[in-house]
Image (tube, rainbow, N blue to C red; front, side):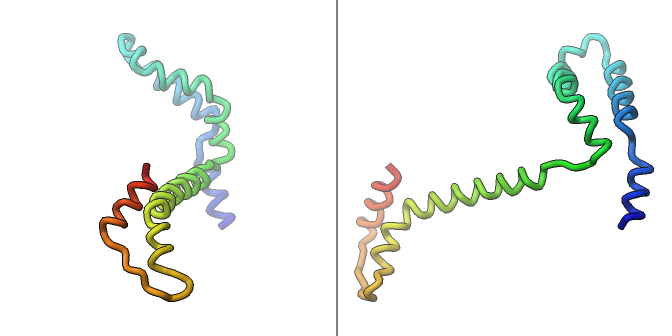
Length: 116
């Protein structure tokens, strides 16, 4: 593993190489098209230290952001499920074991009441 990391760091561009490549790319943009690339070039100028730091330490928070997104999606799905099924589940899954029949009309009314 250490050998692979050493080989990777020997082949990797440095922050100076990345900055030079950006400069060459920027110069290659035709004069009339600079306005179309302004959001990108402005973002690079604003975030240049952070972007170039990646070439020294190739770490990102992409894994953490992915987990945060997954948690958000799961919370949203569970909340939608609970708001509709919670009252129905309470009626169907009674603790004392008695079965209580719930009509479709009652179930639809219950979901509408909980959704608003």
